[in-house]
Image (cartoon, rainbow, N blue to C red):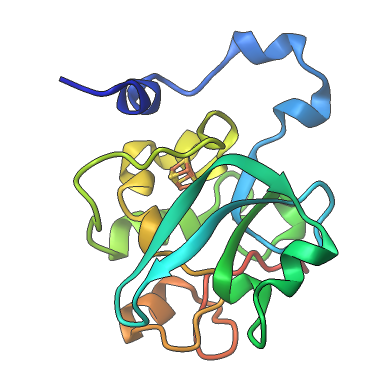
Length: 172
Ligand code: SF4
């Protein structure tokens, strides 16, 4: 028996239902975006421990503001928050012309981190979900966009790496 969030997650990615929305509203969202990207929102806060990060998903994604960015304190916002923004497509080094290669590597190289679908509000528009389905969501909670204490495995997934490792969307 699935809870409501899980039922949403298991639904096929939206198709025609989105045709009535504006073009920008239906663009897929990158779930490892940068705060300075246009229309970027905060949708999660990194919790857990350095060794085992766990994303806490916000009930409502928040627009990026200077006040929110300042909350990350001495570290970069991308080490503390997860941002979602319209996928840069061919403007991103992870885009292979059809798919997000970062999402592919995340699913193929990292083990599932949770056994329950996270309660994520951006799911209907998430590129990773649309492309990889539930498998991406089961690994998403351990993704830290810029993680300077990432494991060797995480660094290989994030290739090309950022700093000492991270899952940052790379705009060319
Ligand atoms: S991969 Fe799944 S849990 Fe992660 S942001 Fe996308 S929809 Fe949400």
